[in-house]
View 1 (cartoon, chains in turn yellow, cyan):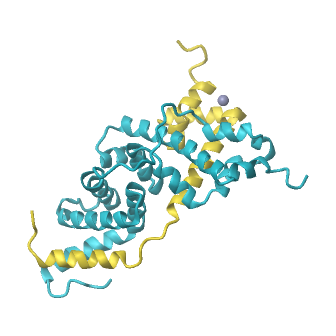
View 2 (view 1 turned 180 degrees about the horizontal axis):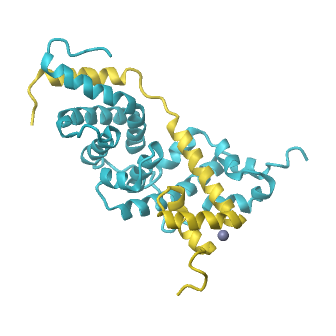
View 3 (view 1 turned 60 degrees about the horizontal axis):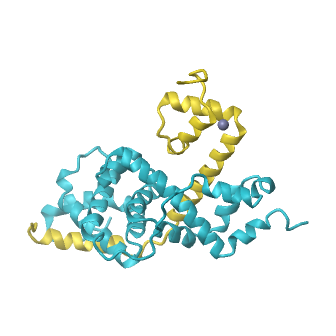
Amino acid sequence: MSIHPPDRFTCEEVFARLDDYLDRELTPDELHLVRAHMETCAACAAEYRFEQGVLQGVRQKLQRLAVPDGLMARITARLAAEGGKDAAG
Amino acid sequence: MDDRNGGTAEVAAPAATFEALLEPVLDAAYGTALRFTRNPADAEDLVQEAALLAFRGFHTFQAGSSFRAWFFRVLTNCYFSRYRKQKRQGTELALDDTPELYLYCQTAALGLHARSEDPAAEVMGRLETEHVEAAIAALPEEHRVVASLYFMQDFSYQEIAEMVGVPVGTVRSRLHRGRRMLQQALWAVAADRGIVAALAAVGSEGA
Ligand SMILES: [Zn+2]
């Protein structure tokens, strides 16, 4: 099945795990093999850096948002009203 | 914190405990609700509704476990039960194939990789929050929900699976596919707003 030493990943094997690698969802063994490959393969490393940059950019933009003023106060008021009556089914 | 519970002494303590746990996660909860509902009024309603439901079910929250994960599960369930049956807006993407490395390939085709040290930053630096919001909003619902939970918080696949009520493998495939669709949507927005044209000129300004 495998035509390469089992302690190495090919570019294809790394690419198949790129998403899981970005999400830190690899097993420790796979993580090690992916990292080792990235250290010597500029093409895979460039793809990884690019994908990582896009994810970070998306995350940063989406987390910048304006929460409505007084939202916590309105929730607090509703909870207080809720506390004033018996729990409804 | 301010005690709005006034005369109802016996609920004051749990309400105060609940509110102290809720307040630090409220911004992220609102942001996630906004990605879910794509509408500020519905997002606030959803967060208020989820807060009320969570408060009613607060006795089921296990002290010492993650309140954030617990509350986001309530929020997600609340969205599914109350909001998802509303009319589907017509803006969702209908993509049969979702090519991998879409932005990478598009920017490479522009020659950006030869002209920039950090081509991802060149693209993302030109996109505004509203552009990314528009791209997220264009995702089909099941991908949008998973992607919202993923981008707003650093939840694991397992945590998201528990929130959405699907197997981990389903979360993984929805998230990966959702990200590929998101890249296509981002590129479409970038083309729309003249950003692709600007990227084509990166590195040649000084020439
Ligand atoms: Zn490689």
